[in-house]
Length: 356
Image 1 (tube, rainbow, N blue to C red):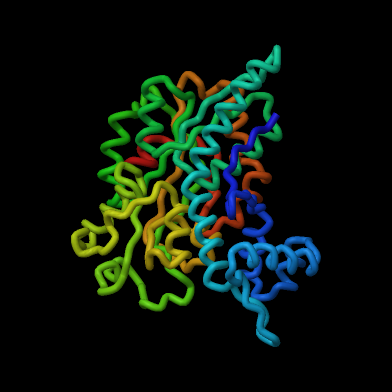
Image 2 (image 1 turned 30 degrees about the vertical axis):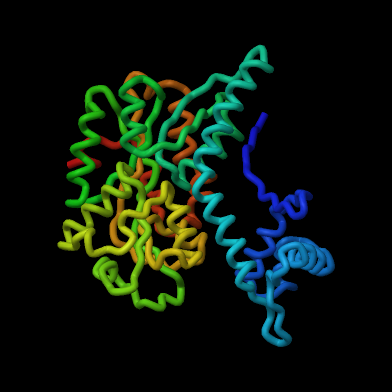
């Protein structure tokens, strides 16, 4: 059994509700990407007539055009269409991790009620990431146990592991001198004699800007330019701590960064804000920048690992996770994620390799 919790849009006019189907947002996304209504319909597998009717319906209800069609020049989003698309992106990026957590918990509760012999449950707390999402998909398909996956920050996940609230915790740590601040926090929660580290991926974090980059943002120093607005990650997240360490290393004061106090809770939410034009620059991972058609300026590589109690290393569920991380199917899923390296995926690594 799979449970998916999502949100939907509703427009109410004159007391009558109108539900906005997801296909409208998909259509707006496709038009922006393809620059043609015909190519957008081909991409989505719907007829031109259907798309025309869908756009006309919502343009009539909103009283504004969503798309501008120009003979010989294809199609582009009108102001309202672009606003709708970006607002939906931002909402999805902001709430998806929490909705996924609710879905996982509800699935576990329903299986316990409906199934007299429910699948064994294995709980992982980890920061939201594409690689662990790919791992969960494979485990759901191939394993005989239920992966109870909860998305939290790295430190919160490690605290849950130490408290016995989960079986495995995921965390990410920059490679090089920038690791020191996070390392000291992590090592308060981990013990080399009690925990084993499993390598998931090496990934790149950096700056995200729009493709046209009108303000010529090239590096961290661009953050202090006049007229440049930044969107930050939330205080306490490992990505925020890493970003703050980058500022210190480059002698940049946060007081000189417009938008430094404006926070989002996921890489996707940050990227959505940049893509919408609400901010000029954000900090996050490469594949999310690619997903939102943003330019990525790489700054630092980091390890993404799982921590598991030594007593559980030989547990069949942990061994299944290790095997899948090493599998061709996992590598195929992750190979298209820009800035991700799976060379060491599934390896048991020492504390010295990660923290020294």
